[in-house]
Structures are given as C-alpha cells and as structure tokens.
Length: 481
Ligand code: BG6
Image (cartoon, rainbow, N blue to C red; front, side, top):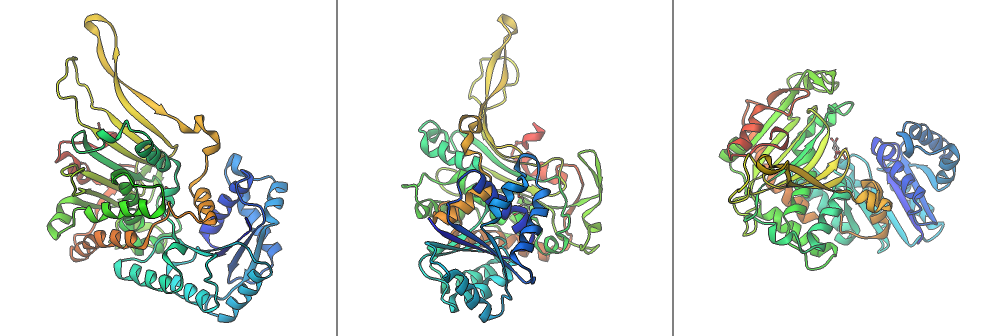
C-alpha cells in the first residue's frame, strides 16, 4: 500500500523523540508498508539532506538496541524528505499539494505534531487547498484543548474539513501492549467476565507515576498541570478500558460507544466532592532514586509562586449496575518515588478463611511501565502440616515471551494503525469532550480555592492526603500494602 505521511512540526520535540524513532522501528520490523514517503515540514529553511543529518544526530542518542547503524539509518532515511512551510501561508499548502500530487498515494496521513493552537488553522488551510479527500487522514496529538470549550472548538473546525472517521485523536497509552492484552483477556476469554464486577472486585487503582520532573517543558507544563496532562486523557482512557461493557464487535465505533458510556457514568463532581475526593500536590526539593532534585517552583520557566499541580489523586465511581459502589482511584505525579504505570484490580477477600494468618485477597495487575505484563496474584500453600501457611505467588502472564513479534512500542503501533486506517485505538470527539466535561468542575473548584496544591517531597508517593483518600474506604495503595 503506498502512503504519504506528513509531519507538521517536523523539527519539534515529539517528532524526533517519539515519532521518527517509532517509524524507524516499524521499518526495521518490516511493518512499514513499502512505497511510503515521509515528509517533515517546519519553519526552518533547510534541505532534506540537512534534515536527515539532523535526525541522525538525534538517533545517535537513542538507547541501546533501538539505535540504528549508519547504514540502516541511510536506508530508512531514503524515504524521509523535508520542506519548509509557513503554516499561515495558503501558497505553502498549494506547494504541499503539488508535492503530494507528484504521485497519487493510496493513503495520505497528516500528523499534527505542533502546538494544538495551530490545529484549527492547519485543518482549515488543508481543507481550503482541497487536501481533505477520502484517502486523507489527520492525526491529532494531545493536548486537544485546555478545557471543554477549546476542545469543542478544535473538534468543530476539524469536523468542518474532515469526517469523524478521518480524525485520529491519539492517546499513546492506548497503544501500549498491556492495554491490548487487557482487551484480549477480558473479551477473548470467558474466565474473567463473571468476576469483572462489583460482587468480586473491591476497588481499582490506576497509577501513572513518573520519577522525572518537568525538565525543559516548564512553560508548557505550568499552563497545563497534571490533571490536564495525564488524567483527562491517559488515566481516563485506561479507566474506560477496564470498566467498559463487552463491545458487540471488534470495530472502532462499537468499542468507542462502550467507552463513552463509561465516561458518561462517572460520578460527577460537586464543589464538596472535589474537596473530599481530589488531592492535588506540587513537588518540593528532595531525592529521587538516590539523586537530589529541585522543587517545582525552582524549575526553569516556572513562576516561583505557581499554583500548578504536579500530582493528582482522585476517588471516583462508575455509576452503573456493574460497578456501583466500587471505588476507582486514579493517581499521577511527577518526581514520585519511581516511574511506574499500572492498573491494579483488587478482588474481595475470601468470605471465610480456613487457613491461619493474614491472607491477602487476589489481585490482578496490568503493568504498563517500565515493563509491560499482566500478573495474577494468588495464594498457594507453603510449608507442611501444622506449619502450613498460605503464601502469595503470582502468575506472570508474559506475552512478550510467548509472542516476541508483538513487542511493538505505543507510537509504532499507533502510526501503523493510522496508516492502515483502523480507528479502534483512537479517541472519538465525543469521548474526548465527555472527559473534559468530567474534569472541568475540578478545574473550576481549584481556581476558586486559593489554598493551592499540597507540597510533597520529591521522591515520595505524593502528599499524605492521597493515602488518606484510599484509607478512608479501608484500602491502601499497592505500595503501602
Ligand atoms: C505525555 C505527557 O502525554 O505522557 C508527559 O505530556 C508524560 O508529561 C508522558 O511524561 C508519559 O508518557 P510515558 O509513555 O512515558 O508514560
């Protein structure tokens, strides 16, 4: 299948850090369809040769086995081209059209890896240039807006140029292998479904913890904060994958209809429930993984009196028959004790134990980071006779070992899906807007509450109030058990 893939924001961070390396891996794995052209466009005036040399320099920084040899890079880079483009100039879109017209690729993918405030302008100009035919797809990177109104405005413009089925809103967490395996496990096996409900499950915890600080992204982050950066999108998307009803078919709209129903069933916030069920924090100086770390307010491009949250913990519920009364805890933060993303499904304890000692209930852990995998925690007998006790063991469902060819990074998978035109792993506009609708009362309440975020030392698990949030229900975060 021939394709043309155009990266707007071709010299940006995302392009060299994630997108080009992901495409290279797809190429190396033999998954990138042959006959493709990759075009980076940006403001700088430079040739394709210079761009390739610049890219190679960045590829030299890629870790270990993922780094290409110079020959391998040269072969991959034959498909990579560069054009200067001023995104406000209609004639530059006409030139882009000419370039695309030098052959008629079956599929054209426009990847908007620019700042989102440019999305409406780029889409309008692409539409005006007639670059919105049925073979065109547009990929939109997050953050899609900073609140409901701005997200709706972006969606309105995108929809005035493209149909919903041409819009690929990316949430790279949906491309992580464990999320695929969660779907496979839930909907490909009959074993879990009878247990996947309030009668058997005590609570569900979604943790997206990072040990890194905001690094060089201080100005972006300070305008954004953890709720918009990680909860509105990644954490809520994961929640929908865990909580959704089985879709009737494995197609994009059947899946996205079910995800939307979950988002619509989330318990709405009130001013009182924000105060009770949401904890916001901001990191102070401390030590992370043995190294000293400065506080958020001392980071570059962050105002010293910034009220921006770098940590959020939320207790919520999915108000339907399957999940009534089951707490869902969501938590994310920068400069936490470790980098770890996981979903923990805590089952209820056995109703009556015939074994001595404390016997922790079963749990199912979906690990997204640093490694991916699924673990089922069970109890097994240990010792003999009088001294027999139950001891935790876990079934490690290591799909990477069973299917090594599946080891595909999130961006690699999603780029290939966009080229192939499969929307299953992309977010529909109504889902995205519903997620904004749910978080907005939290943003409003925080704006009105001048007490600001709670401080926490870098290298910890956030403010103590986050532990209290879970302890109130008689539970504990996984690392506190
Ligand atoms: C991005 C956020 O969407 O996800 C970043 O903007 C965050 O702040 C990143 O660091 C985390 O992604 P991953 O895949 O490294 O967990």
